[in-house]
Length: 167
Image (cartoon, rainbow, N blue to C red):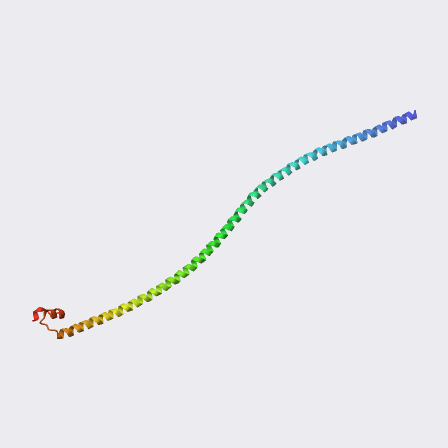
């Protein structure tokens, strides 16, 4: 009977150990299940965050592409502007050169015109003096002719300016 009591105690002890391990495994399984659920919820949150980041990246890529096209257009515009500025500078230099040449020509023309005007005035003055001299010579000659002319003739009186009443 001792043996049966010992066997019964041993069976109860083995059963208690088995119950203890079963309870411990049940608690471990419950903890694992809870952690698995928490981990799966965390994974879902992280997946959603990753999806949001991917969407943000796609939006940024689209914005970057539009910005790059705008930069390309601006570069083309800048190149065209620089080219037109260069052409305008060249044109301005050409115009300035032509302006200087035209101003020089105008100055030469003005100088020539002033010289020509001065020469004309001198020639006019000289011609006027010569005309006066010739008029005086003609008057002197007429007086000399009138002094020797026969005043009885009508033609001589007209030439000398003598009235007819003096006969």
